[in-house]
Image (cartoon, rainbow, N blue to C red):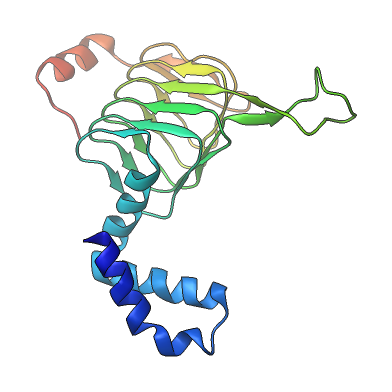
Length: 195
């Protein structure tokens, strides 16, 4: 079905192919798809196409980019996320993000490289985000870390180290500000009350 729809779009855009550059044709195609599917439907479909695995009820409300090996749990919600690099990222169930968030899973090889400041090889990193985690706007996460269950990452935080369960962290580099009420968190979790 998807192949048939793409061929229909190509047919409808045939006159444009003769006058528009490939970039303009791509923008027109994207606009047409967004109008047909709705913005969230279009961005969600793109995320599913590149995911290594995907749970139920994925929602991508705004433009997002997912590179590398990305695994989505159930009920993941994105409002503008960029996963950059060839590493692995696992999003647990009920993940929510604000706008303009970024996860970096690849870095230039500067420690063991054969040139300065770095060589042409890369170091790939892994990020594990456990269930029920919430990112505020413009959060940046660098690789080889785990963000514990129920954690909240404040807007603008730069996460460079592991985050404990139910911690609320913020700043650059991110530090624990306080912890959620774990008893209340566990009660809501047991009752299955997920947003």
